[in-house]
Amino acid sequence: MKRMVVALVVTLALAFVLLLTGAMLELEPAAIDLRAPVSAHLADSGVTHPVNAVLLNYRGYDTLLEIAVLLLALLAILAVVGDAPASPSRAAHPVLQTLGRLATPLMVVVAVYLLWAGAFRPGGAFQAGAVLAAAAVLLHLVGLLPGWSTPRLRLRIGLAAGFALFLAVAAALLTQGSLLQYPPDAAGALILLIESGLTVSLALILAGLFLFLAREEGA
Amino acid sequence: MTLAFDLLLALSLLWCGWRTLATPRLDRAIVLFITFGLLMTLTWARLSAPDIGLAEAAIGAGLTGALLLDAYGVLRRRSAGP
Amino acid sequence: MTTGFVFALAGAALFALGVAGVVLIGHLLRRILAFNLMGSGACLVLVGLAQRHDLADPVPQAMVLTGIVVAVAATALALALVRKLHALTGQLELPDDADD
Image (cartoon, rainbow over all chains, first blue to last red; front, side, top):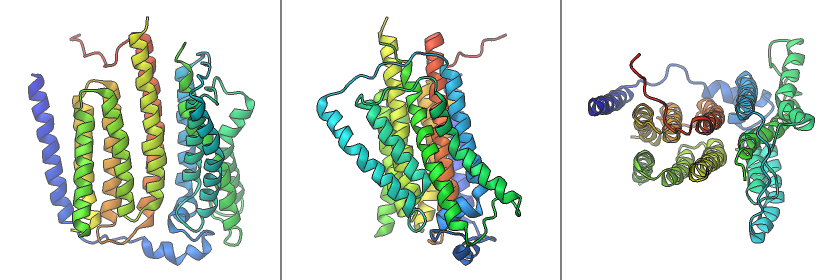
C-alpha cells in the first residue's frame, strides 16, 4: 500500500514537471510589461535602484504587510516557547570569542552601508537587517550574548518600532492623499526613514527568531 | 558558453536538492541544505538579481541553516539525555 | 534557451521535488527542508519566467525578496512547533491517522 502511494506521488510529480515544462515552452511574450513604467517614474520615486523603488514605493503596501507578518510569526514563536527559563550562555574558545568581537563592528558597518546604498545600488533594509541579525546570532554562538527570555519593554519597543513607524508614515500620508503615496520631493527622505526603522526592527525580529528559541535547551 | 555554466548550475541545484531529501543522516541533510542555499545565491547572481542573492545568502542559507542546526542539536541532545 | 528559462525549468523540478518530499517524508525536520525547497523552486520560476528574454525585471525580484524573508519566518515558526512537539511527546513524526 505504502509503495503504491510512493509510486503514485512520484509519477504525479514527474507528470507535473513535464506538463509545466511544455507549458513554459509555449509561453507567448507577456501581455503586461512593468519594466517601462518602473523606469519611467524612477526619478519621482525617491530612490534610483529599481528593485528598492518597487519594494518601498510602488509596492510599499506589500512591504508593510510583510513586516507585520514577520512580527506575527515572532509573536507566535513567543507563544509556543512560553515561559522557559533563559539558558546561560556557554562561552566558547577564547579565539572564537575574539573573532566574534572583531567581526561584529565590521558587520555593523556593512549593515549601515547596505542600508544607505539601497537607494542607489543593490542593498536596502532587508539585507542590512539580515547582516545585523547574523551578527547577533554570531555573538550568541560564541557566548557573548545570552539567549533572550520574555522580552521586556525596550526589546518590545525595538521589535514593534519598524512596523509602527511604517504604519505612522502610511497613516500620515493617508490624510493627504491615497495610501503610501509619497510626495515626490520628500520621497527619498521618507523612504530612508522607513528603511532605518525597518532595519532595526528586522534585525531584532530575525535575531529573535533564533534567540528566543535558544533558551529552552536546559543544562 | 554561459549556457553550459547555467545548465551545470541548474543540475547542481537539482542534485543538491535531491541529496538533501534522500540522505539518511539528518545533520548531513542540513549541511546539504545550506550548500543548496549558497548555490541559490549563485543562481540569483546569474539571473541579474543581486538583491535577492544578498538576501538569500544571509537569510536563506545563513539564518535558516543556523535555525535548523540549532533545532537538530537540541533534538539530539534531548533524545540522548535523561 | 536563455538563462531565465533554464532556471525556471530547474525551479519547476525543485518545486515538484519539494512537494513530493512534503507528502512522502514522515520526519518533520526533513519535511521542513522539503518545504524550503518548494519555496526556492517557486521563487526561481517567478523570476526565471519573467526574465526569460534575458532582461532584468525588478517587480518579481522585489516579490521574491519579500517571499524569502517570509519563508524564513515560517521556517522558524515550524521549527518552534516541532521542538515543542518533541518536548511534549518525544515524537518527531506526526501520528498516523488511526482508523476511527
